[in-house]
Length: 273
Ligand SMILES: [Zn+2]
Image: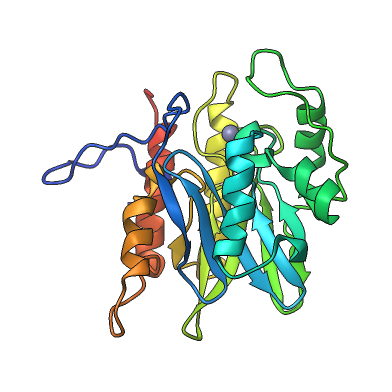
């Protein structure tokens, strides 16, 4: 059965999923900033977070949480708690034009000169933010527009960008090279997960099929999510913080494991949904 054909799998002993982040939660559980690969860390809470990548050309963030003081502190202080300096923040790659992903880009750009990468479509979208959405229009200047299929190089770290419209019209997903005590792996970040009122489900599904193919070709063997409820992130970061030598990294799923995870997104847009 291919992922594209996936519609229903009999659930037996597994718990039903509650995948939707609780955006109304005013006091979400905060995750201690966590290195879970040699070069990749998570900063955030149970609702939303971001990823810090250490490269030879400085630090790179994937997304940057909500546009509020609490999240700004989480990110900036989190970088310090990880033993790094926000002054060394070279770039922020933004998956899509929703506030819980671009939130603090303007702050970091003004304070540290951080370069901001976003798709041109979602930059225009976020500059003219619909009043139906709870975020102010963005005021940062995009430094680079993401291009489909490009490998964005920071030294030897090449982050692969894939255009995957659906959640938003300009949504991008990323494939991030990591090492676990020197062993190389590739993590996939599905850029926009939820189905919005304006989501074109067929466009979403086609993007998913495309991303599946790219991940197969690149031998992706794990995933990361900016919404930890989607992938039991907080439980796995806790495990990673306490992991003992000899145990495999909980984010290394193997190629089959990655594609099993990815099925949940096909389920969102399965016929009849
Ligand atoms: Zn979104």
